Image (cartoon, rainbow, N blue to C red; front, side):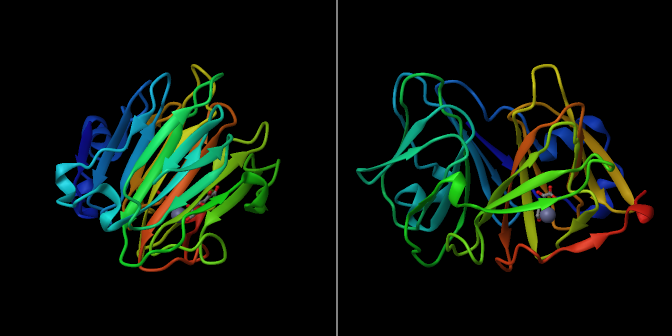
Length: 276
Ligand SMILES: O=C[C@H](O)[C@@H](O)CC(=O)C(=O)O
Ligand SMILES: [Zn+2]
């Protein structure tokens, strides 16, 4: 499956109601047992996918939309595993990814497949952006990721940011990628919130307990809307939109961006008291 997501003007967005917001921003059908599914967004041409190999190894197909000889002919890819141990095979080289490990695949890798190792199935979250230079394929374990602690218990936003693909981490053309773990009892992510006109962003929520939900906020700071999200749902954030959420329990999420620069700290804060 390949869902196409077009870009939306913030002026138009003001008139959107629940169903239209969900159709245009939410990716809630990517995670399917035994399948690889992608959404092709027109936000910096970022592709968002999930691969869940169960028995059979899953091969990355070359979507006709790319008009390429193979998927990564002019693209790069970031992959983070959020479940059981698994493998990514890239041009014959086998990379083992435990939960929260990240693999970067550089432009030019021809054959990619995803495999389970027995035990719980892995769940690979995948981002791919256009690339014009080949950076080396690199595996980074969760232990090796740069960690930043943010927030407080009193404001229910105590969390640890884990950075993998960024200016001082794994080198890439466009991709910036990492994940944030909310500490037990904390529920607010990306609060205080921000926008970054120079980069789009996508969030993928995981470790959301059964029956719990995330209220994900988007829109310009003075005109916000929300989307209800469950475990393994992804959502795209246009460059004009805040991207922040509150859960009915603690949870984790992968964030990823593409666009003008690779500087994680390039954010324009939106003051809480100005949010409408
Ligand atoms: O541009 C950066 C992204 O929005 C996230 O990294 C923010 C985040 O994970 C958090 O504050 O919890
Ligand atoms: Zn952001």
